[in-house]
Structure formats: C-alpha cells, structure tokens
Image 1 (cartoon, rainbow, N blue to C red):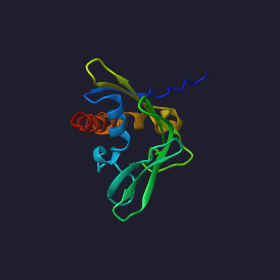
Image 2: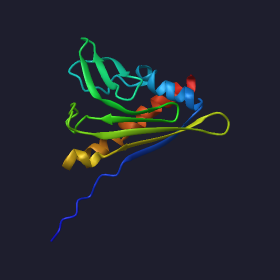
Image 3: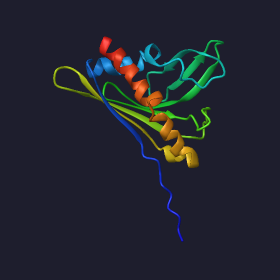
Image 4: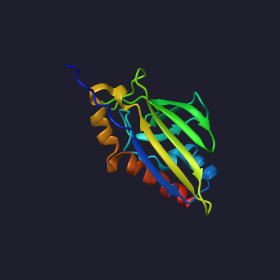
Length: 159
C-alpha cells in the first residue's frame, strides 16, 4: 500500500493598506526595521535591528544587541513596487539553515482610491519535512504572519 504524504498548504494573507504601492513596498523593505517585532528573532541575544538589503541577492537578517548578525535568508526577486520574494531559511527549530528554502512572496497592487492590496504567501513548507505542518500552524497563528503583517499595515497606513 502506498502512503500518501499530505503537504502543508502555503500560508496566504491579503490585506489593504492606505499607502500607494510605491510607499507600501518602501515601508515593507526600507522601513523593515521600523515595524518588524523585536520579539521575533532567532539570534542568541535580543535583536537590535532587522535588515532587508534592497536588491536581488541581498540578505535579510537580524543584528543582535551585541552586534552579531544572524541570517534569515536572502532576496530572490526585487521588483519594486510590484513584487518581492524572499528565501526563508529558518527551520522548525527556529535556527538558520542554509540548506533549507521556503519562500515568502509579496505582491503590491494598486487599489481604487490610492491604496494597495498586499497579497502575501509563505510557501514550500513541505521542504521542512515532517515538521512542516507544525511550522505552518505556528506561522499562520495570530502571533505569526497575521500579527506581523498587521504591524506592517499599521506602519504603512501611518506613512
């Protein structure tokens, strides 16, 4: 008998912000440190700042209060102001794993009235193996991407 493996579905979110696509993209990327929650870090010490380098091939990472850098992944697609794809290389143990690749994609679409619809997807969770379903549950919780994206939206709305 063949066993069927169920792959975790991508985490998808859609939100609207009051900023233009150009401004929303800028807040998400250049303003990354302004809205990323300090509680969401993987380094061994408290996080001093979050960094997202503005180019394909750039890194996204944290800098600890001790100055140490801790990678999260890299920028795969940099297409302002429409699209951003990031490699997320954080494993189920919440540590950086350079051999792991899941993806975070954001699309910024102009809405009538000057706002922006932001479509978010965190995919390839099956690359985490057996832990993928548990990670999906964690990142799809209020303390995961929902809460993080709400912080982004509040910052974009105020911009």
